[in-house]
Image 1 (tube, rainbow, N blue to C red):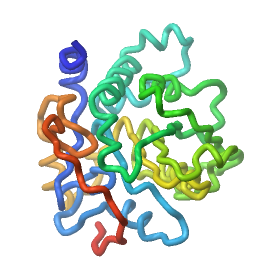
Image 2 (image 1 turned 30 degrees about the vertical axis):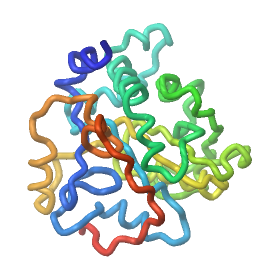
Image 3 (image 1 turned 45 degrees about the vertical axis):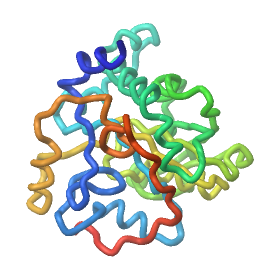
Image 4 (image 1 turned 180 degrees about the vertical axis):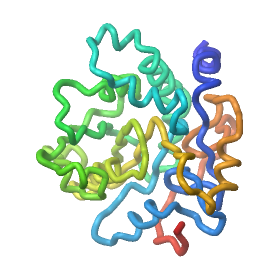
Length: 274
């Protein structure tokens, strides 16, 4: 049974992201100082009137720096033959994590969105990695009715700019494939979100009506000054077993979940983290 396999393989390694007002960022689920609703970076991206961004980010797990979940985000994409990758424990765990989402919670996106997801793409590497990226292989377990959408990385992006919010970092070769559609963008790791939001912005500027970012892991640092977010850190990083029954779209069980009101607008926030 999938749920039992996920509990055995992921329960002690992955951590369900939480959605708690004034504790976690309402966009990326990262830790907050208590008086804010969004982290500094998500707030700054939202306030930019010249660049549209995705208003829905769905992380599947927290990955605390130095833990096995964090190491998995690097090791799954280490250079290796395809057959060896299938036996790689890190790759297997991420595949199982995505499979659990696909079979249990992918349809929840259609309830909270203004229209159902019909297209899907992965965030291309800006480093010019040759061949098929392992993230694109992982994406094969996502719903088959999400039609593949081509998204290309621009060439020659300086290293210092790769995490900035810049839609020009990505190119949509066929805008007609995204026009007036809800597109899902799959990203492996969210640190500050600039990479994924740049991809989302490129899709929105190309004509997509809505973009959701599905993130495998929301990375959390605990080795930097964090006095303002200390209480939040303690609350979201409590020792608890990962459970596929907790929906990453709404942050709680969706087994008896009534339909959520569809969003009509996304107002600029009034508060932010310093």
